[in-house]
Image (cartoon, rainbow, N blue to C red; front, side, top):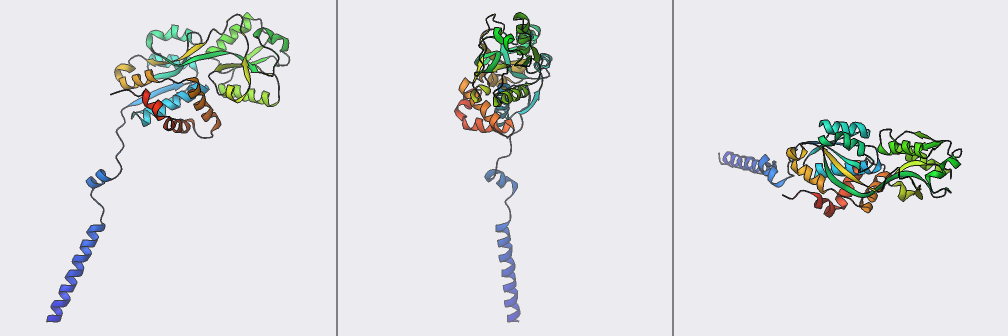
Length: 303
């Protein structure tokens, strides 16, 4: 009888000890996990639709703005690449929220005249932009007026970008005003730089529609051709343009976009990083954002 009681007591102690060990190893309840574990992601505040043209500075600034809006401000961002003409049309109709690459007062003047009443100009995000015809420095010409003298070497072509771009309209005017016997070939920013690279690799003559800021000026020795008739205008600024009502709907977004400003060194650094990387531009933009925290924080709206 005593042996039976002893065995029963031992069995009860083993069961109790096992239960205690199991309780100690069991996961904490959800409330404790929330207190000591990772924070749950914040609720998305809304969706921002950014439009951009496939131009180096626009790609760089738009991806950087996307990274900041998503990572720092809690928004979801949709980006759409298009030609500049439909971008202005869609901004005016409210289909897009913002465009960070409007060149003013000359290049995109006609679009602002047509759609300006339905848009908000938040001011410039970059100063000292310029457009014109660009050639490698090894070419022995300095003015647009000299292009006809080497038209055969150029195979009768000026390498352009997308047909709706302001620089293409200005170049069509330049062909007429200077009496150039050259054809303007439409394409895109990447096809233009690819043609430029191919010509430079072979030390061949080439003329392209070019603009600064652009990473190509850091990579190759280039020069703008003189424009005695002023077809391409003076130095411009790049502006951020938004749809009407963005400030009422999302005042913090409008404040951020108003504060957003890059100087030549900053934008050139970001453009170069994107051009040299095989990663998606948004990945490079996030890395750049994290490496320039003080600058990025200075753009954020103050609560």
